Length: 235
Ligand SMILES: [Zn+2]
Image (tube, rainbow, N blue to C red):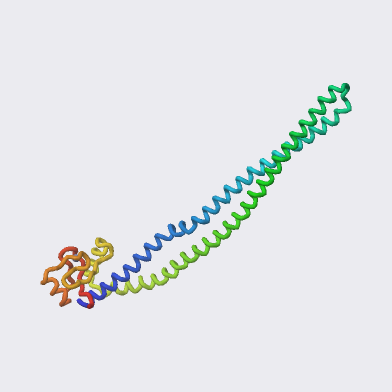
């Protein structure tokens, strides 16, 4: 029976390792997602900057067109100067040219502002593109590390599974069935140590009779309260 108990303890350790690995496998998508967040944020910022750049470029083009129209208007006005008959008409026309020139000056100033803004946003886009490249690199290496670690562990888990299978064959069928039942209901803790007269599974103190029998190790015995299989902890 002592051998059976030793096998059960080993079996439980294998199961613990396998369960832990499965949990980590389940967590991988979430971990990858978390690792990807900085990259996603950097991309979002880049997208916003690009749309801002589109906007300022559009404004700049509008100002350029407005400037061109203003220049054409002035050229036309100047061309008509010779057609004018009276001095009054001439003065009015000169006045109109003057105000058109003022308007043109205003547009030129606005165009300069728009060009400066477009340049500034363009620089920001360039800088953010570099940030995205960096974040992409970081994410790729983190992804490789996470997946690589899991892959190499998956290899060693295959070994554990094989050992576990071989080991279960050596355990008596009814004991193995009890172990499986307990493992399922007691969250993977089916075999627990007895410390003094305390069950380390449920922390209740056990009747002296049971404690004595567990110490003898002639039978596979369960805790009175939580039914977990008991063994004597090495001192
Ligand atoms: Zn117990």
